[in-house]
Length: 101
Image (tube, rainbow, N blue to C red; front, side, top):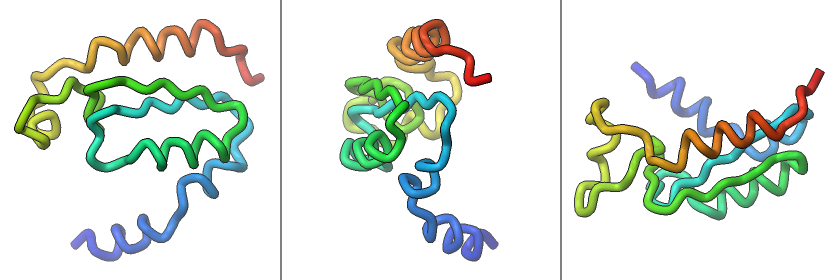
């Protein structure tokens, strides 16, 4: 049922799509992310000059702390908390970013 949606979704280049955005951008890159590589984050960061990037070691794509030998655990357990560095990074971004309007 989702095949058409996924084919369409993967036809877009996130860096190209985001390049036109003029507002503030925070890129959070998890060091244990198995979906988005650091090179993907670099491309996005390069495409958006006003972006701020924060690398979070041991964070998965779900922005939760990686669990050794269980690469998908953070996808399926909603009780697992966000990585401890996520909220401070978001708070710092909000507090130090001028309003776009």
